[in-house]
Image 1 (tube, rainbow, N blue to C red):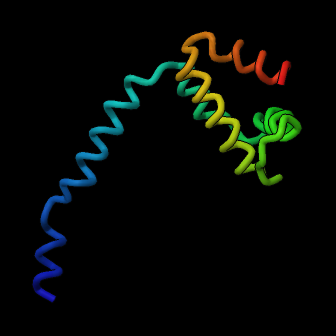
Image 2 (cartoon, rainbow, N blue to C red; image 1 turned 90 degrees about the horizontal axis):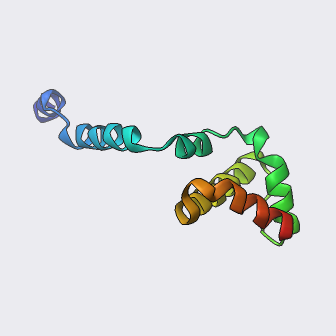
Length: 95
């Protein structure tokens, strides 16, 4: 029991390091990246339905639709940078 109490008083360096990484990475995210990752699930439904019609397999569950759409948007952002939205709209339109 004494050993457990001693461990509680020790600084938890690993979570602090992770927190520092998160803080530093957050500051370097672009507005596009923040907007993509902050997209609410109700804003993803139509895109997910279109992607499903294009052959993507995703459960009809809002959280899974949101995950697919955000992931796809991030992939387009990584590939095309500032032009990601136009390229993704083109992809969705032309299938």
